[in-house]
Image (cartoon, rainbow, N blue to C red; front, side, top):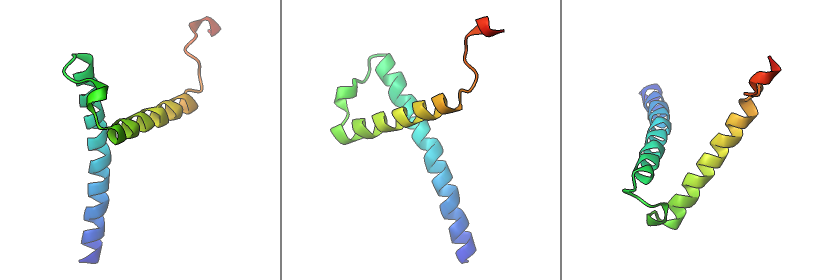
Amino acid sequence: MAADKSQLQHDLSELDASFIRVLEDVIDALVANGSLRLTDLPEQALAKLNQRKQTRRRLHDALDLIPDDDSIL
């Protein structure tokens, strides 16, 4: 029974992480089409959103080992 609960908690955590990314994409789409202004969000929500975006950007930059400059080839 405990193993089942542990697995369910793990599954829920993974779903939460995926769903957070969906929410970020929805917020970006709403901002892009003018339905939402970032200033409409509570200050704490905006801070967390910005922190996630900055962290994702740093991760992407860290993993981008080959520059996009085609002149190298």
